[in-house]
Image (cartoon, rainbow, N blue to C red; front, top):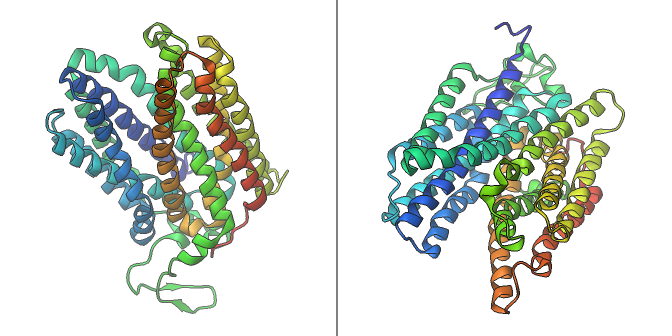
Length: 442
């Protein structure tokens, strides 16, 4: 494969796309496998909830440290170590629902390991991908999450049925190991020769970490003796950073509420059987794959042709994505058929994915050197949004049931879908007011 025909940065993007797919296959796979094993062992619902939520506790705690470590030693190395760690855990830990402590430690370890992955990916992409290709590169990479979720939910139940729950762990470990081999063989730090204008463009070797007092030459012949310190105070007080954080929170609130509670809405709200719905229930996630990449391609086209400024492009796509998603979310309880609910949820998730070409790429616009750290900060908010949203939805439905409300009534579910809808409207306004596409961190 000649780099003239297939630039190395494209291979890096493809490998990061595969990495996010494999990660989400693991997440979906554990939920499916453990639920089956726990139900067979008659494990209580509270214990099941504790085991399933442990992953997100570890995941939330390692986001910011993941960005910091990737900044210090390089995202390429951190990404490989993270995959080795969680893949080994899946391969070695037996899926025995009676060993609660072992499973809690294992899921905590997997969560911590995977928490390093997305900040590392953003660090790698900031080093490799030039500004006019960032939107579609990040969109393609992140669409791997949705593809992995869809593939996992379609394929893994059959694997559990015919090979048992433990087989899912082994398949996940094998996928992780194969990705590690590919990454070890093909991934590298970007050489200066590929990016002669790295410093001016904000990517390439100029963003690589320096070891100790390693020196590098600058244009005036002087020497820089150390890597610049991370401007934590400036990051935490920056309104554009908080615009990203708010939108990441809202995106994951809506995503996790739909991922975790849409099946319940189909079964109890609409009185439908998920098995009878077949593969149609995967349409929302397939739509996310499509719209995520559409958003990236459109954004990069507008940037390359200089039709709009980067700031206006980010705000346009973010606003369109979140406002259309808000309308679709609030329309879900209105439609009382499977087709209507699938259509609204597909539109909601699809346009949320489109909005990622706004806020999710903005880390690299405003701070390419610290993209991994900013991703860690905003993704921490996103993780907590998932925990809060899933728990709050359960409490709302439990309160409705305690008040003798009918879960098949659209009024019972209205609040569930209105909350993320209004959050989308609020977040889009925040992004319009405070975001920027200009580089604000040196």
